[in-house]
Length: 451
Image (cartoon, rainbow, N blue to C red; front, side):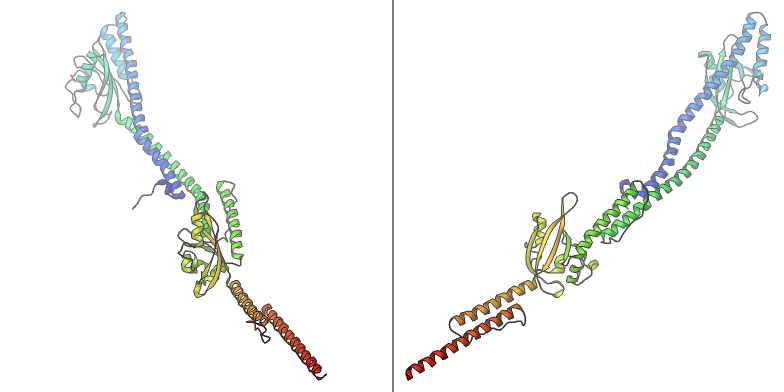
C-alpha cells in the first residue's frame, strides 16, 4: 500500500494528525529529554543538599573540638556531647547521621546502636561492595566524597540504593556521613511524572476536542466546496452555497458562488444559441455541448460529454488536416471551414468555426466549435443556378426566333415561379403582337395586289 505524503492528505486528516501529534510530541520530549534532565538535576540537587547538611553537622564536631581546645571541656566530654548531639539530629523527616573512625570502628549510629564499637570495614552491601572501606579511603585521601551502596531504610530489612556523603575529621580521626535513598528520589520523580501525565491527558482531551471542532468548522465548508466544484466540472451550475462567515473560507465560498453564477450566464448563453456549439479537449473528447448540438447528434448532453467529436459528427474533415478544431489548436487562431457532416445518420452541409481554448496560463487545452447548417442555403444556391440556367436557355431560344419557348418553375408560388410566369407572359405577348403585325402586313399586301 502506497503511503501518501502529508501534503496529499485531506485537510481533515492533517488537522487530526497535528492534533494527535502535539501531545505525543510533548510526551516524547518529556520522557526522552525533559525527564532525564530533570532527574539528573534533581539527583544533583539532592546530592548538594546531603553535602550541605553533612557540612552543617560537621560544624558541630568543629564546635566541640574548639571547646576542647579552649579547655572548656575535656576531650572525652567534648566527644561524648558531640556524639549525643549528632545522634539527636534529623533532617527531611527521619534522615540521620552516622560516624565511624579511621580504624573502621563505628562511633555513632542512631538507628543501629548495636553497631557501635564494632569494626564495620568488613560490612558488605547486598552487591558485595565494601562501602565502609571506600568511605575510609576517600576520607583519608580526599577528606570527603560521595559513596554509593545498598542499605535498608529505617524499619525495613530490604536493601535499597543509597547515596551518602562522608567527610573526615582528622583531629579525632572521625568520619561523619549521611545519605539519601535513591528510591525516594525516584518516587518523587514518579509523582512528578504522574502529575505531568494527568496534565497532559487533560490538555490532550482539550486539544482533541478543540482540534475536532476546528476540523469540523474548517473542513465541512471545504468539503462542500470540493463537492460543488466537482458538480460544476460535470456541468451542473444550479448550485449556491451558504456561508455567512467572514473568514477566508467564507470569502472563498462567496467568490465560488460568483464564479458559478458567471459560468451559468456563459453556459446559458451557449445553451440559448440557435446553432450547435461544443467544446473539446486536446484528445478530441467532448467536454461540453449545448442543447441544439445534442439534438443534432441525437443524444443527451450527459451521454455525449466524454465521447469523441469525430464519432458524433462524422464530417468529411474529421481526422484530417482540414479539421478546423485541429487547425485552431495548432495555429492558435480562429478557423472556418465548410464540409459535409453525418451525425445520427443524417446528412448536412455545414459551415463551422473553431477557436482555441486556453487555461489561466495561456496554454491551449482544447477548442470550441460552432456549426451552421448551410444545407438550405446551398440548396437555394443550386436552385437559383438551375433556375437561372433554364431562363437563360429559354431567352437564347427566344432570341433565335423560337416564339414557342416556355419555362416551368420547379416550385410553385415562389419568386422564381413568378419570374418565370412573367417571362412566359412576355413571350406570349410578343408572339401575339408579332402575329398581329404579320396579319396586318399580309392584309396590306393583299389589298395592294387588288388595286
